[in-house]
Length: 550
Ligand code: F6P
Image 1 (cartoon, rainbow, N blue to C red):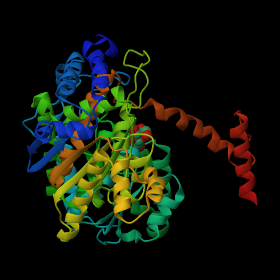
Image 2: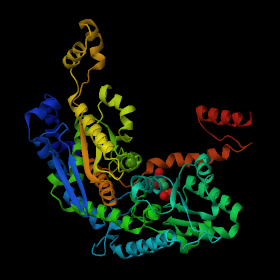
Image 3: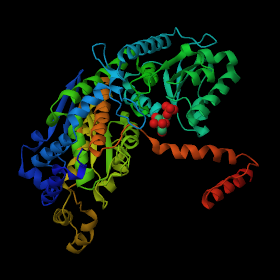
Image 4: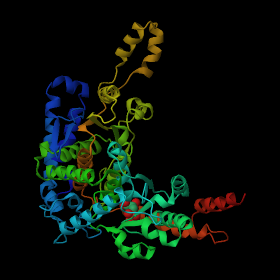
């Protein structure tokens, strides 16, 4: 395949960057009253509606055509075929990437390694949801005969972020036991949760694809000790279930295989919330809402697979992202959901995007010569406005923003929802428009300031503007919409990884730190030899030990 930078469209896009640099976003808007109609696209499916407005991005029609050409030259259409066909596209682990099957229906024919996966997926899903209804219906009882009021999910990364984000996002739909999440190996996380709980009414879900992750296993052991101390050894059978691909380790930990819900190695951790890893979501929301999440995601899968690229939301978002990262030099992306319930959405996208596309070599092992995945961060608006938005508006660097907003609310506070929407629209407008020195000076003088004082303050109070953003406007933050939104970002990440020629589905970059932590943990035992480390690490280890004793 032609190297990315030698594709004619890549070179044409560089020229295009220089052409567009001559116009501000304000000017682009003024020049084309049809800009919103042209640079927006809609998705409808499973009751969800998503509008993508990318007209506030520094693009024009030619840019979008060239980006399309670039993606076609990277064989996007056949690559989507390979993804959906179950080819082993995770080449460093020799695995297919088949998270779409997890939201599949019996009529879908997903395969991995040449074998149909749907029978297993549907069987595990039904078994899990039957368990969910037993817990929620009060038929699954703790060892003392008490019903379950609290669930503690112990997991980290993809075994925590996705389910936690979903439970928070769909809080208005929660009706089951309270669900808590413990991820950090810092004991403060577990003890902070457990101190409020009654062991007799608590169910632990140990969620780990590998069932060997240090943090999760440490928390699981401490949780078991807490339970056994209160209810005795026999209690684990009724109070511990596992979600994993590793039946052997689950059994070795002492969890009855009948209380284990499996998934498969063709599901990456950050793509696994649709599998049994979604157990805490289903416990909180119930089966019907969980199925609606899957249906929304499935509808987005079919849209991604079938829609023409110029109306295909994941492809358009990926194309705009490539443009920003590779041609505008904008290597970060702020996620600003104007939805308090999406407060963990950016955290989830951080793992999804950065663990997938934070890579510096291509699939063939050659180093990339261009930027890859952006730095992703974010907090919900309007809170974010009172934190990092100052930096977005007046800092010297430009960071594109994805705004996310729902038209309808479940809060019952419609007036406040109007204010929320107004703030969301105002922020993207302010980033686009800015406020020139002349406008600021005129305002200040109209407010009664002297010319000298107005001149002094003008540089501080003017805004450069010309800062790009996209807005995802949905009808309502309901289960199907959340499923569709998350699948949209998953597919965006896939398209970008394909364009960059990297493997979006491994995560070797997290391994070295894990390997080094084990011998350091040994060395931190009282009296243990320090081992061989650089002087800084040795100094820190020694000082830590000293501080423990004083
Ligand atoms: O952070 C690395 C990672 O492997 C993630 O990809 C994964 O989501 C997380 O650790 C947890 O892994 P596991 O589910 O195997 O405990």
